[in-house]
Length: 219
Image (cartoon, rainbow, N blue to C red):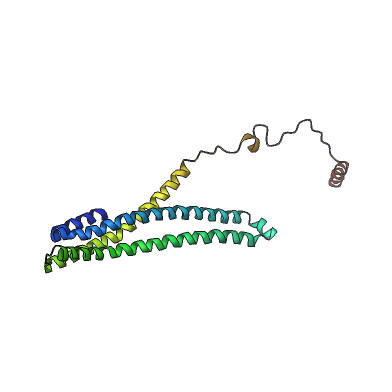
C-alpha cells in the first residue's frame, strides 16, 4: 500500500512539475539503494540478536534448573557473571540495531524535503521555468504525502524483515527430526530397568532376629 501511494505521488508530481520532478526522483533513487543496504545490515543484526537471546535464555534456564546445586557449591557469582556477559552482548547488538533504525528513519524523514528542493532547483535554475503559486503549494502538499509514505516504508520493511527472520527460525525448529523417546536400554524394556543374572540373596541374621522379636512382642 505504501509503495502504491509512493508511485502515485511521484506520478502526480511529474504531472504538475513536468521534467522538474526528475530532481525529486533522483533523490528517491539515491535513497532506495541506501535503504536496501541498511535493511540488509538490520537483518544480520536481527539474526544475531535472536541467537544471543537464545543463548542467554538457555543460561538462565540452566541456572534455574540447577539452583540447589549452585547454592550448595556457592557458584552464584560464576553464573551471574556468565549470564551478565551474555546479556551485555545482547544489549550491544540491540543498541546497534536501534541506532541504525533511528538513522534510517531520520534519513527517510529528510528525503522528501531534499526531493522538493531538488525538484524546484531543476525546474527553476536548470530549465528556467517559473513555479506558480498553484504548482508550488500543490507540490509541497504532494511532497508531504511523499514524506508520510517514505516515513512508514522503512518501518514496514523492518517489520517484514523481523517477521521473515522469525518465520525462518520457526521453520528450522519444525523441520528438526522427531524424537521417539529414550532408547530401550535407558527407558527399560519388557524385562524392566534392571536385570540380575545368577544372583544370590539372603537376609542378614540381625534383620531376622529383629523381625522375630517384633513378632513376639506383637503376639
